[in-house]
Length: 210
Image: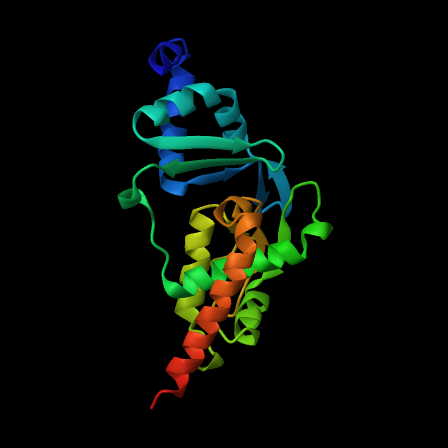
């Protein structure tokens, strides 16, 4: 039982269990490595290492309350998914498109991955690809929706801003983290491309309507 294992933890470990349990409930994903914008380098994520060390306790606890905790040791990913639809976060349309294009960019650049399994890109490249695919109304996007989309995906540890400064309305350098593989897996790519095409046609139809 998870409770028996929990009671055997030190006071410090119990505190970390509570803190990281709440973190996972809020952020859904966690990666083995994280980018330190101040140091301008990628570093091991100590929180990830703690979750790995206490993984069985976390997994059994979350199972009791209807959440599935899983790990991907190859790419260094932890994910926490609810069994109940009412606990799922709903992305707005622009953020969904931004996510899809990030996944395409990740797939296109996977062969160039480094040992951290991250892909570097920037806001302008993502938006330009959206524009090329005909996914933007009038071929343009708003500063607020770009920043909001990136903030949302950063919150869930899907992308990470590479600058220490606040989000820039003109764009940022970003890292696409391997967690995106669990948001949209390899088997879903073809379906994703078809869905993007449907969205493109829908945008064109709306734009043509008087």
